[in-house]
Image (cartoon, rainbow, N blue to C red; front, side, top):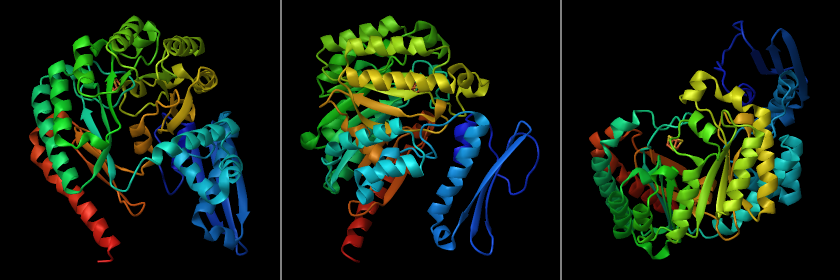
Length: 482
Ligand code: SF4
């Protein structure tokens, strides 16, 4: 219920209390035994107005806690949509992975049943239901590439030239942390080597590599080469189907770095404009221009990159529908192999959230229209949606969708999203996700978030690699009934 409230009040501090405490908007949800069944109620007080709805459930219906929770969400959703004048398109869904949920329902109820459940029981709009269904169909072939002994590798480079206004990721001064890069790269290569030893011991097969951040291309060409060489010398690359590097900021892309990546088997890079408006770029604290995006893209094409992704964001401050349409039109004309359309998410720590300027500037309605435009133009230009996820506090409670030309799906993005495969992660802020080969069990091992911690406590990071061996050992024992 708290998450559902957050959909309607993305920037407000939400406090869960057991008794009314007065002041501000107040939401109550509860269940009561009436003697003949269970009554579920949602009640909202906002700006002096009060509205509520109740529903009676039989004891049998209420015995399924999830059904009671769904009924309560539906009631709360209906009261909040009336009071806030806004109908979120994902209905009562607040989770990160709606496509995974869709797949689970489809396995039991079939395609028509899953769509019906999404629209009628979860109140998801028809367009978002169709989007989830399309993504599910498009990612099936990719998920089929996984085997119980396959895994993907993530390498984190937690440095950026400047901090984007909407980012909560790089929180220490970027200029200060730059000094740490040489030491960081050295240790990262050691962690990669140790992870390679673990993968070899467990006979795991590497399917895809993703170097993300941060902005990996803040590294020099030499440092990029050092990291990529460490990967190639530590892992058996014979099963690996893709290596991606997130170039990120166009102003960090140089010919030397592109060749350093190309010559080491990097097939896919991301060059992320976010917007093609210089005004908006300034407002969000990025130091590059739209013209630099075009130059970096052409340079990458010239260096032989035939698989380029570009990220754009709907709902940025100072952007409007016309501006976003311009961005979509310019980017689709450039014809990258994939385009990832994000919706602005305002994390608590981000400067925009602190100033409370982002949400009003973007406006939930605007973000909705922007996404609708992208969703209509991209299929016309030959792109298909192949992965999708959501975050909390997204403008308009929308989603991020990966679109690509058929055949250019990024495996890593699908694997990480659907949680059907182990991801071994190296570097600062990276999270290893272990997937039991024989069940749905997942375990996570997190690395330190900040570079100085990573450097100073590196022995702990290396020590945690044994947990990967323990995990697979236990799963093997369980399989053998030990
Ligand atoms: S490029 Fe990405 S990680 Fe770096 S500051 Fe911007 S949003 Fe954050």
